[in-house]
Each structure stands twice: as structure tokens, then as C-alpha cells.
Image 1 (cartoon, helix red, strand yellow):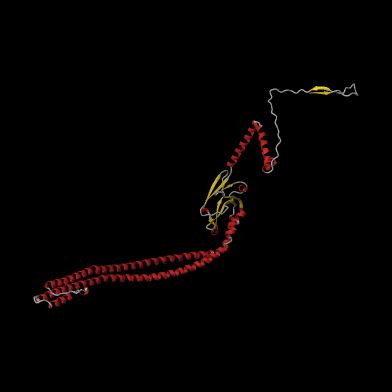
Image 2 (tube, rainbow, N blue to C red):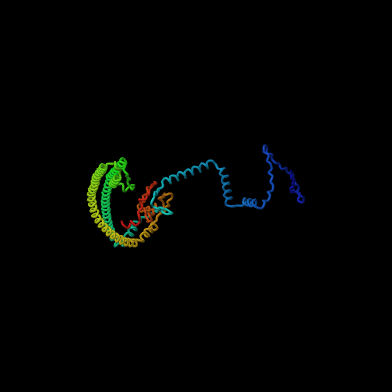
Length: 445
């Protein structure tokens, strides 16, 4: 477009200025890409509710948005950095890493690891680095030693006396046991002798006497059978007794004689009477011999009884002697036990006085860590690392102690280790159950 402009002429003062025409030339740039015009549409108003809250939250300026904007701008600016800047940053980071590794490698560390079964360390186990407290502990030991001085000798003497009394009781009990064993053995032997005697006598009467009884019954039945057969052959009116107890040779012979008196005339009476008398005589002879043999069994039984009775008397005498000794030893054991009970009661009283005298000792010892504390290090996974820095490094050599507190069977026990770090090295100390000592034992040193 042309602009008309008439500047005021110096010759014509009163006239209106005339405008001159000027042309604006706009350069044309070739090979420029065509740019599509961006159509901006109006953003609809957010609907009330969740979308409105989200839109408000998106436009809200807070710490998160500020950090995000700062980070994005920083990343945008870092993209434009020169390669030399990146090289310088990498060199600085590498130097810091190397320096940190060197410092970590040069640290002085004492690593304490616990491996415990009986000791309980509580809910918050820790390792304490304390200044040397030996003088304080020695002072406590002296103070409590003065209190326990009158009681300790009495306890020691009573403990020795009680040990001797228990040894005497054990010896007496052993004597009682030995005598009881001898009495039991003699009683068992006496019972064995008696059982052997009974077995022998029983065998005698059951076997040999039984054989004689069987032989007697066999001969009796043979006699009765022969008489009955003879009476039947002769034709006598003979009726043997039906009762088994009455079936005896003498009764059968009488029955046979009575039958002869009722015999027919054809029977020769003298021959028949002679036969029955002969049979009865043979039976009496057998019976006499049988009685003699039976009496021999009685004599044999008496012979068996004689050594048995002698042995039983001997055993009974021994048992009586041992029983008297046993009664004496049991009386001695009862007396010794009464003495032991008295000693134990007295010792119990002295122990109660000792406990009362040294009662506050554990509390006084428990106050030592707070007074001499240098550093607390928690035990994590049974391991605690003590770095020699700060107050630990400033302490004088051989003036620090490593202390771990615990309990064994309900009694307080400590482990005290010397703190001996090696410069620029990591050393490890392993603590076990045997390293812990009850606090009460310190009074006996």
C-alpha cells in the first residue's frame, strides 16, 4: 500500500502540509513450507462433578507441578549443553565415585557378630562402646565385699560341711543297698532250697509212690478177678461186692468161703478152702512187701528234708544277721539326713542374707553404661558394625570396651571385650554363649 504524506514546506507557512506517497515492499521468501493456520476453538466449560475437579486439579499450581516444570525446563536446557560440559560432568562424577570408594575402603571398622543359643538379648539388642570402667567396677566390688565379708566365710564352711554330710549319706545309702542286696540274695537262696526240696519230695510222692499205688491196685484187681473166675468155674453162688471201697482181697476171700458152704455136694471143700487160703497168703506177702517199700519212700523223704532244713536254717541265720545290720545302717542314714536338713535350712538363711546384702549390686552395675557411654550400635541380624569415627576415634588407645548385655536363665550376664581396631581395616569379633559371665560372679573375684 502507498502512504500519502505531505510534509510542511518552509516557503508556505500558512498552508496545509502535503502528503507524499511511499510504498511498503514486503520481501518474498522462496521455498518456504506452507503453514496451516491453527484453528483455535473455544474449550467447552467442564461439566460439574469429577471432570470439573480433574480440570481444576490440572490447572492447580502446587509443589508437584513446580518440580515437574523445573525438571522439564532443566532437561530442555541440558539438551542444548555442549559436549565439553558433559565430559566435565562425567569426570567430576567419576572422581567423586573413586574418592567415595577410596574413603570407604580406608574406613576403620570393628564388626561384632553374635552366635547365641542360651543367652537372650532382649527386644532391642545393642552393642555398647564404653570408656574404661574397671575402676568403677573395682570400687563396687570393694564396697559390696565389705558387706559380704561376715557372711561369705560362714556360707563356705557350711557348704563344705554339707558336702561331707551328703557324702556320708551317700556312703550309708550304699551300705544299705548292699545289705539289702545280700538279704535279698540269701532270701532267694533259701526260697530256692525250699523249692528244690518241695520239688524233690513232690517228685518222690508223685512218681515213685504213684507207681506203688498203681502196682497195688493192679495186684488187688488181679486177686479179685482170679477169685471170681475160680468161683464161676467151680459153680459157686458167688456175688462180689459192688461198692468199690469194699472190693478188697479179705472181703472177697470171706465171700468165697461163704459161697463154699452153700456149694453142691460134688465140690471138694478141702481143695477149695486150701486154694483160697493160698491166694490170701500170697496177697498178704505182697502187701507186706508193698508196705515195706512204701515206708522206704518216707525214709527217703526224710533224708531229703534233712539237708534242706540244715541249709534253710543256715540261710535264715545269715538273713537275720544282715537284717540287724540293715536296721543299724538305716538308723544311721536317718540321723545323717536330719543333719543334712538342718545344714540346708541354715544355708538357706545365710543365702537369704547374702542376697539381701548384694541386692542393689546389679542395679549399680546396670548404671555403668549410661555413665561411661561412648556409642550405641544396634544389633541388626546379629551383626553390629562400629565405625571408628567421632568420639570413638578421639578416645585414647586401650580406653574403650565393647559390652553386650543379656540374660542366662533369668540372670543378668555381660560380655566385655577389649576394643582393638586395626587402622584402615575391617576386623570381626564373634561372641558366643561361653563369653558371657553372670554379673554376680564379679563379686567373687
